Image (cartoon, rainbow, N blue to C red; front, side, top):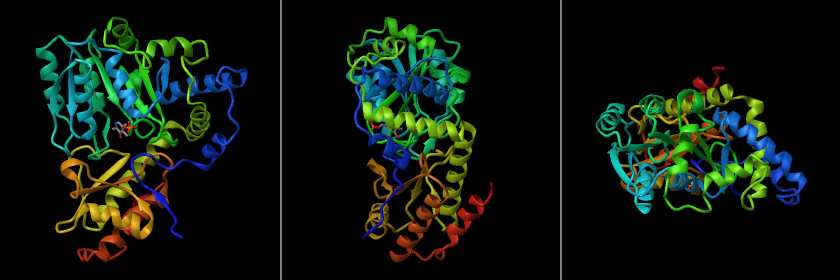
Length: 381
Ligand SMILES: *Cc1c(COP(=O)(O)O)cnc(C)c1O
């Protein structure tokens, strides 16, 4: 037997309470039984997104939310700023191109956070820019971008929206949509929301709804207005992923039970313990400026293959972490600490890394040196 530990940045572990809720018999989405679920989900998502606006839920992975954030708010020929500091930033460019939207790319070295002054300069120069698209947490590099500062640049521009892929940031770190002036805020089910993959969520500001009514990109299934009109009547445009909605109602209850401040503090502590644990074992964190609180990318030490480290974690100890993507393949491996994650997930991760690397011949630091550092952080309340 090998016990399995899921420590990858999505899908993340699903709590037993949620699994149990999803194992009940299927109910019909147009029956009265489903209405209280829609009502609870509508209200709890507003709480989670810190918005008074309707949050739209669609069946699809997180990328469906990213695609909807282009097709609903832009017209072919519109210009957007796409901040590209990793695998997910790159996706903005690809989606924009698919819809004939013109991306002005702000390329950020992998591992770095965007220099907000560059975005400010581009916006000042070109009043026709309709949107700034960014990741709050770039999962491929373990880096966070400064969403609050970016929002300051867009909030007073009538025809420019800030679109934030918060797929590994919402429910991890504070992103108050209304207070900061985020226009489109996106997340997915399989990251911090502690659910299986299959749902995308899109919060839309009043400013963005105005652009939506003028935007001409083709859309049908992912037409957010149609979904909103239905939600306002406690219904869905199409057959929703009923089982996932039921799981969602349960995971949102759990999140509300913990409270936003405690959720953010827990993630912050777990992220710090991971970073300190990794450094305590003589390794380096890949993020240079602002670290993601959801996932830590660790630089593979000189002479050791990051792919081998992550594969050995799984083969030797049943720990599923993640490797590096594209040119980071073999250079980094990634450990998640988001969602249904707590103290001993961090101990498992750091100690697993120590054991695997020691078996591979790493001698810089003795076993337990990283774990001890992590423990020092984790015993602080
Ligand atoms: C996981 C993730 C996505 C969405 O990926 P899907 O595979 O479509 O769910 C998008 N952006 C970021 C930052 C992510 O971590």
